[in-house]
Image (cartoon, rainbow, N blue to C red):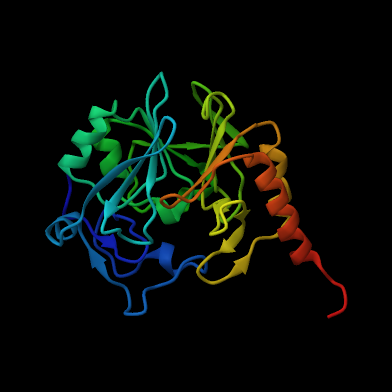
Length: 272
């Protein structure tokens, strides 16, 4: 495991070689830390006391994160599918103990990541489990550590087998993707959305943003396209990017009413 490579402290992406800047953070959908560009490594994080956090988040879905959290604090999700586990989204931290604990759960057969802010240490995870990393072709430019384990796909949907389908919703990033698990929730379906469709504090709703930290709203046409692509997929729950950020019932209706509310406010041109 390469524990000496530079990691951006703000977004948590691990780069393949030292550099002065982090392009992911310099983009308007993220930000450079208020103290300037700062770097760390996996070795430094381990020495600082970071450890893995692995807890059940739902039926057949296990949360994989770190404590204390790194970067923006997201956790990944291990989908325990019969044909092989899929790790959805990514974190920065990894160590030998985490790898051993995930192996006890069946390991990782494939990795898929919603968007560049969650690329984290994806290559270390890919190498640890000899697993491919699925990223939409439209986000190729943001990959911080190019590697043969990364599989770029194109189009609107991509099957990972076993009822697992990546959908290029295109919200937040052009290549922004979500993962639909047909057999989740005892066959009622589950949508793993990262913050492409982010589960908000009122966990009956999701929201859609071009830039979350800089409060730039997503374009209505992008949201309408995402809704069209999700229409064929039933799902009971929506799993967001942070611990317990879950819409626990009637997920399809939650996404529909969330989009209606968003579009009503975005397109309101009536009198003040």
